[in-house]
Amino acid sequence: MNKLTRALSLPQAVAINTIDMVGIGPFITIPFIIGAMNGPSCIFAWVLGAVLSFADGCVWSELGAKWSEAGGSYQFLQKLYGKKYGRLMSFLYVWQTMIQAPLVVASGAIGFSLYLTYLIPLSTIEQKIVSGSLVVFITFLLYRKIGDIGKISVVMGMIVGGTILWLIASAVPKFDSSLAFNFGEHDFNLTSIFFFGLGQASIKTVYSFLGYYNVCHLGGEITSPEKNIPRSIFISIAIIAVLYLLMQISVLGIIPWQEAKDSPFIVSLYFERIYGSVAAQVATALVLFIAITSLFAVLLGYSRVPYAAAVDGNFFSVFAKLHPTKNFPHASLLILASLAFVFSLLFKMKEVITAIIVMRIIIQFIGQSVGLLLYHQKNKAEIFPFRMKLYPLPVIIGISVWLFIFFSAEPIYIAGALGVIATGCIAYGVKIFLSREKI
Image (cartoon, rainbow, N blue to C red; front, side):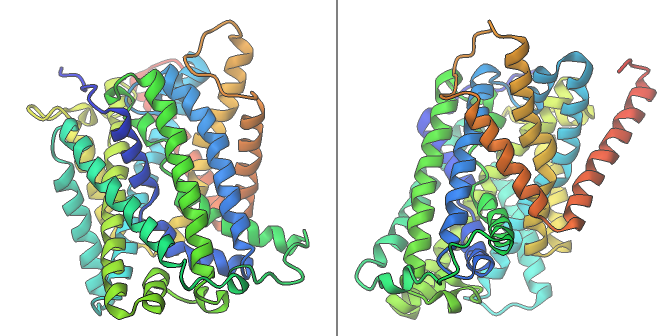
């Protein structure tokens, strides 16, 4: 069988991470975040998202540098929890990936179709046609060698960064600090209402930060992974954290928050206020392009997860197939894309965002963090190519924030996440029974 090729350099890895992080997410979620915090205190939610990303990024960096193989969390969970529990944890991760990865792609496609209505009036049916067609187009873009993917990603990353810098720079001449920092007298009261709003807003900001770990899914295709995986994670988080904070402040300094929280086209309205309708249309087109770049990176990374599990014999063998000439897991890509196509026709944006975050917290994010603590405790002398500073503080911070976000979600999403885990356990039990393996 052909093997994956290590062809992605550090700049390409950073580009893949950043275009994954900056999709349609921040442009869609800004009004929700402002509304949840009732004003400029929404900045706290962005700061919390950045803190969580850096803390959790420490975990991903250690694991990615240590086990640089395709599949990311699939590999990590298996190695962290050992032979007895590792295959169960990794199976559960792949099980939920088969649901949440297409949901992530579907959310971007749905967001794309919603934002397109600023330029072209679309009925509900027409929006669904657009979102489904976009998934097909992204799949076509990804149907090529990984070296070509890396080059495309760099170009996409430059356009994404340039767009956000244009947004931030445009605020300077007309920036009104009295609008941007118009805090209310109760905004700093740490009441239950404040933390409820912070929890709801943080679900959206964390959604906008997700993707800093995408290089770990592509671990088998990164050059010098022991160095480039940690570097690409922290570089991309730092870049995006600064850009997001400046972008949020810029929007607040141009549009009163009372108006911004109800705007479905916040970036378009922003440029319309500064430059007029023509610039707003150009900016909207760039936002739509950014949505495409994010879906490109997301589907690229996640297609390697079922592939890794199938190669390992822990998932359906069809996912292990590589393209005969282009050498990428084309069966995994096509199956995930097909599910994303269906989900893009069935769901709505807001409910998809919350489901994506809550579903992943227990097995993937907290599971990895707890596993790393236990692994270090049991294997104190083992060498890791990268070790986080101030260990175990970043891990503890990450676990605490993840739990806060998990329990801030509505009960239906918590129940749904636990339901996915439960059905995964049943499926794993059936798999063991049918294969007559010992757990």
